[in-house]
View 1 (cartoon, rainbow, N blue to C red):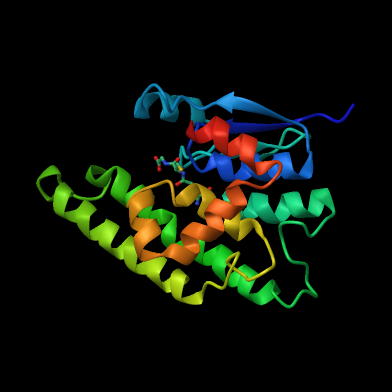
View 2 (spheres, rainbow, N blue to C red):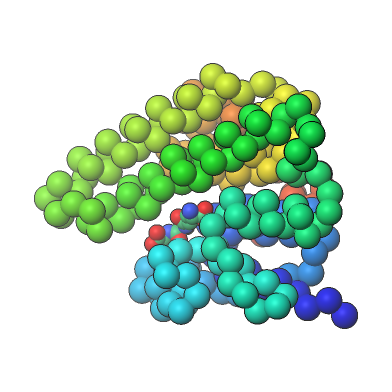
Amino acid sequence: MTKPFGLYQNPGWGSAIIEAQLAVYGLPYDLIDAGGSVSEAAVQEAMRGVNPLLQVPALILPNGAVMTETAAMTLYLADIAGTDTLVPGPGAPERAAFLRWLIFLVAAVYPSFAYGDVPTRFVPPEGAEAFQARVIEHRKAMWRVMEAEASGPYFLGVRFSVIDIYLAVMTRWRPGEAWFQTETPKLWAAGATAALRPGIAPVMARNFS
Ligand SMILES: N[C@@H](CCC(=O)N[C@@H](CS)C(=O)NCC(=O)O)C(=O)O
């Protein structure tokens, strides 16, 4: 029997992006509680020795190796699954746009949560509120950049991809669902449509109910 992947996760966190991919591919996996329902300290404790940044998700591969970074996991799992269901292949017309926006999501948008969620890690307490507000404004600007590039019904057009899974999850985060519905309706719709797809719907329900 194939050994399962182990996914360090907290419901509603970025681990949902990877959980959805494992589910779509039908790869066996176990969920490992990363302490998010308890406290920030519990998360750090759970992730110590697993991810040097103490972040979620982390993926334990069947051979025991640890993988961090959702984009790396995304590309790797597509290789393992041997299908282009979620990741347009090298010859696909959407490949360049796919890579561009996947990396934009993880290199530009995602770090803004590390800054905004715990601002006192980066600025003194007296400046934290203003810093957090600026981070959220900058994040909104980044989402608007993506909105301007979005096609429909999915981000890349008719071609569903893992970008839409990122959107399904990240549009649940700050600045919040109401903001996305009003300000970036194409991103919202792509994520909402992805969230209804087979394999993904049960993962969304488990993470966001
Ligand atoms: N670049 C990482 C970002 C992961 C990340 O920021 N995860 C958040 C949760 S959604 C986290 O663990 N935050 C806690 C922290 O930064 O201490 C990835 O793509 O996996």
